[in-house]
Length: 95
Image 1 (cartoon, rainbow, N blue to C red):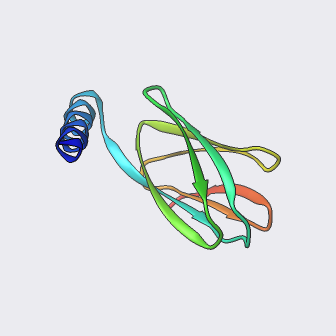
Image 2: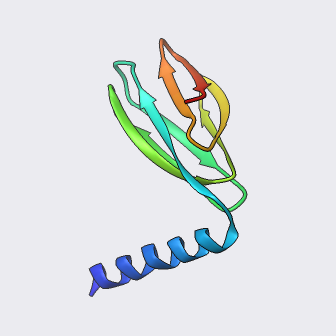
C-alpha cells in the first residue's frame, strides 16, 4: 500500500510539472572526498540532500534552482546545467 501511495505521489508530481513548466534534470556532482549537505530551493520546492563523496545525483528542477552548501557557497542552475563541487567550491557549468 505504501508503494502505491509513493507511485501516486510521483505521478501527481509529474502531472503538476507538465502543467506548470519545463522540467529538466540538473547533474549534481560531488568530486570531493567528503559528504556535503546541500539545500536545494526553487519556486515550487525546498529540500535537503546529503551528497556522498565522489557521487552524482540528478535533480529535477522547474525553472531555476538554487544550491546552497553551508561553509562552501551557493550557485544557481537551470535546464541541463551541471552543479559541481570540487576542491571545496561549488560552481555551475553549462552543458
